[in-house]
Image 1 (cartoon, rainbow, N blue to C red):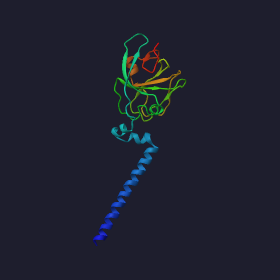
Image 2 (cartoon, rainbow, N blue to C red):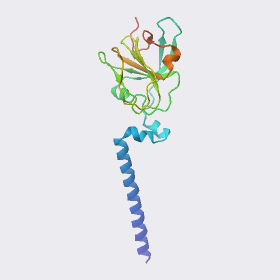
Image 3 (spheres, rainbow, N blue to C red):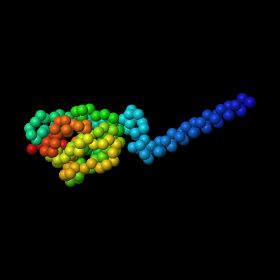
Length: 183
């Protein structure tokens, strides 16, 4: 009788464990196939865990073309294709004086999107000398809509949405950073 009870409990426990593992596998497979939808349903701590680890911060300045006040920022720089493809995805916040600078190969015309990006952003498109050539303000979080510059660009600087308007950043302003040659 005792052996019969042990077998019954073992089978019941093993069956439950198999069911739980199968359900977890199915959910993870579905989430991998539908990352944008799955990411919207997880708490921010889980979403943050999917983000690319924060890169070292580098100083960056924006000099207004009209000679106004220079604005300082601390930015992560995305120089590799992996870093550019992840960008600020899965981040739930961005400090007011922080951003991300995307550097592209010479002769490319970058197109951005907001897939899995929860923070609304301003995107400043920059030429090879660091001059702002276009501004895409207040981009829509989680959107797959392509965002491109109206003129050729070599880099993109992402800042919190509203920063360009608040600081009066516009085409013609100069971004000073180690990746842009200084005359």
